[in-house]
Length: 292
Image 1 (cartoon, rainbow, N blue to C red):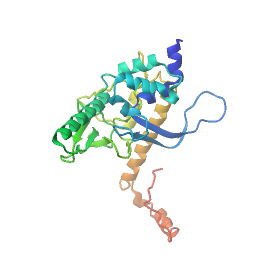
Image 2: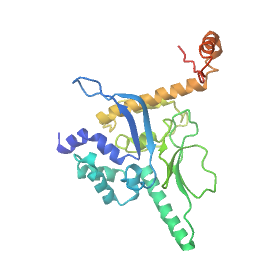
Image 3: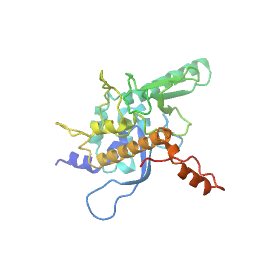
């Protein structure tokens, strides 16, 4: 095994996070003992998109690194404290492979629009208008669809004009709180795991172009002939599988909560009476009955 392969496998989390467009957060709880590595988490997973520019006294990270000059971004990634064991040559190869990534183009386009707006405001001696970038979601939020547009995002200047109806990620220019990304977002995997999904494809069939989340991950995790960046991801691949499982379970619970009538919850009248009798002084909230 070469030195580059060794450092890539050892620090694959760091390499992936350095080129991710958004952050992944969870309470990671490794199992006790000295057995093989196992990625285990407790509680929820969190995915956040950052603003186009960092706040004061903050370092550039995630999507903010894609709007500056390439070599400067590489040096910022390499000089980060957590990347002390990473190699510049690996960073450079990954950066070169992401030139045609549609999310890279989206961030660069937003920066271009921002510079044009600043120039217009200077010439007209007015304040720059608000700029946001909104990633376009699939047509049905209950299904895990690929985007059907050639571009993954739309950039808006000012408050005029109606934003797209189906959108799941908003990137603000600055001064806004970070945006939490829904686990139903069709963009989530590609922006969180750029090393595992280096090429974003938009495949559609005449018969069916919508699949449920579980079917989508079953297809993506299937083993096929040839090299697979995903199955070669080591520890990062384990994180991806756990993250996918949490999203599938979240989707199932969401369906149950929103389709109580179809699950014939009215048949559980005895249970409802019991809840009412034992919560006379407290509001039990909205009960959700799980199927057997």
